[in-house]
Image 1 (cartoon, rainbow, N blue to C red):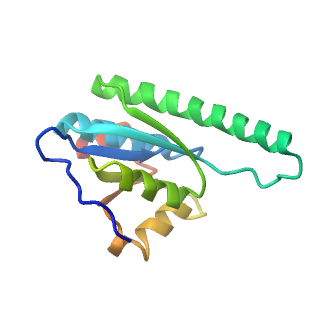
Image 2: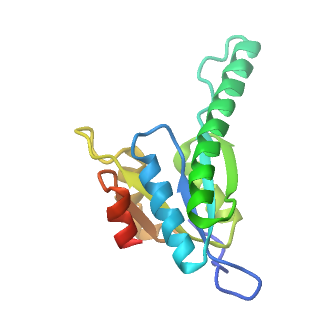
Image 3: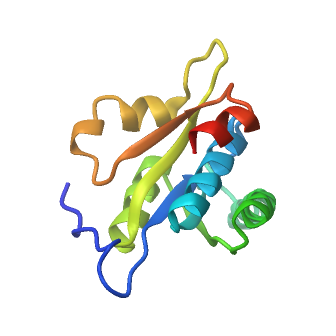
Length: 165
């Protein structure tokens, strides 16, 4: 994997933290941590929601409606996360919606934005493990990933995160 060099700290650039916003219960922990940390170090935030393409494609209209509904739900999640981030940092985050495989879209966004300096993920604390994105990106692919990955334990409280971020 070849990714453009990061330019986060060059003149005219600012570091940016990328947060994946999804339907998981622990997602708000990643948003809260990234917003607190960004506010502390003067970084910007980018919030990414990835829509899975509809699997059922027999009737074009059905697939289009399903994708539109998924887009509306992704925008709703981004709006909620954005409001939280804005309350914590005083700044509006960049909102991005992509369609495709989640890991591929995360890498594509990082490739396109040379200011992304950190990927922030939240790990699930339930019996199903940390979640597929954390397991996939932070596992075997971590050694060749283009930016550092911060994994926020899903069980941390706001107070815990405030002490850490």
